[in-house]
Length: 145
Image 1 (tube, rainbow, N blue to C red):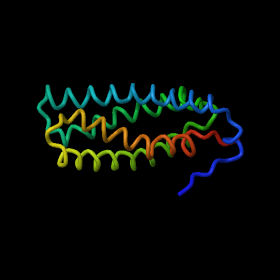
Image 2 (cartoon, rainbow, N blue to C red; image 1 turned 90 degrees about the vertical axis):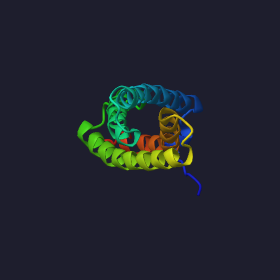
Image 3 (cartoon, rainbow, N blue to C red; image 1 turned 45 degrees about the vertical axis):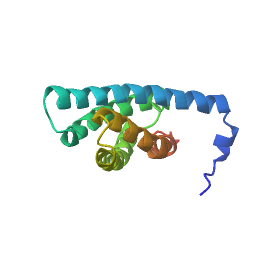
Image 4 (cartoon, helix red, strand yellow; image 1 turned 30 degrees about the vertical axis):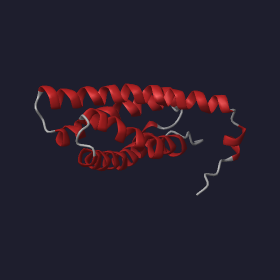
């Protein structure tokens, strides 16, 4: 399956795309730090089962992702926030399910690894394969009014 680029994307300099992806990684790092902190606190300090601690950790990361991607990564503040928030909620719901399912699979497949490492692995897979493309091409794509 080939990914087709729009005429605007073909004319966009590679450096611009690289900087945008770098900003996405920075926001993702901050969201991951929030996610990791909540997961670790719930598992290690509160004694919550790792399978149940994952959902609140993911929701923390999602909040950081929305605000960071809107303002910093894609600089989409000219777009309607209500439209972006609705799309983000729809796609983030899919993301949440994907993260949850991949994490559960990794817990079973790699029980010798700490749950935090499995969390990083699953989240990265979902980010590269689903999140970034959807955020760039759908959620934060500023549509002329």
